[in-house]
Length: 96
Image (tube, rainbow, N blue to C red; front, side):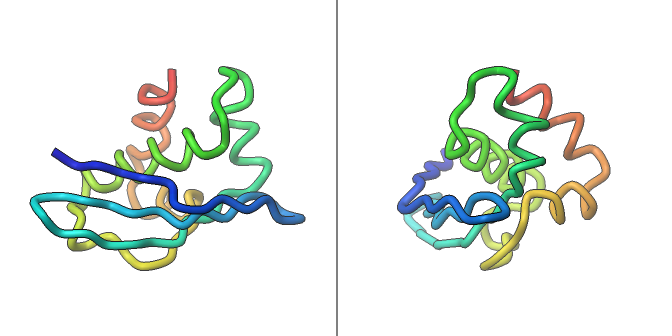
């Protein structure tokens, strides 16, 4: 089982920045995840989800697709969508 924790959250002029810990099979990695205000509006605000919830679920989805060991240290949620064409559809389903 994968455990994902938001260690820190900061709102910036352009969006959000999160420090995220991913724990799996006794191993831990930390990652910086960014998300624009526009992407948050697109995925989270309509459903009343907090930005940190959208970030955590996005990381959860990526870990399921690429594995914890292949998750890069820093990434933007939008970049993840571009790398994995099915990401947006899966993200919408996961965030409902």
